[in-house]
Amino acid sequence: MIKEKYAKEIEGILARFPTKKSAALPLMHLAQREYGYMSKEAMQEVAAILDLDPTHILSLAGFYSLYYEEPQGKYVLEICNDLACALRGADDFVEMATAKLGIPVDGTTEDGMFTIKTVMCLGACDR
Image (cartoon, rainbow, N blue to C red; front, side, top):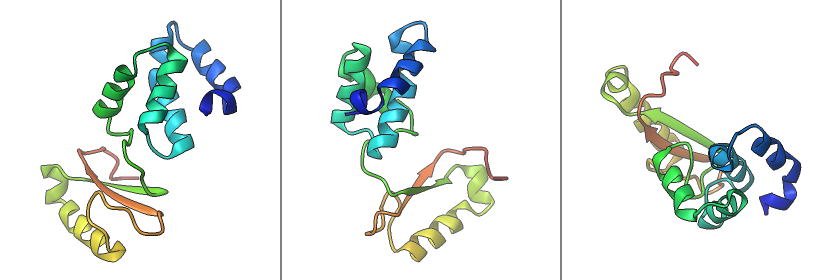
């Protein structure tokens, strides 16, 4: 449970925000870092820390694509799938990555190392 394992870090996060509810995203990040994804149990745990209904955390996890509701690989390859990126070769990159790793989009390699996802443009092609 993150509440016990990360008590000091949680205390620091809560101290940075005017209300507990405001600390939802950083605590979700902490939970995902610990468990690798936002399981129903992790969402309930974050909700309990913040004295919120678990459906509030579930709605945040569903809205923000940075929070995974299913287990992911250690490394998540996020490849843009919008028109501008497709015109610059993103679709070819998706094909190459899926062929090389032998998994479909949204799939994870058997060793749990890589997951491939398509996302809206991250604006980070230069990195």
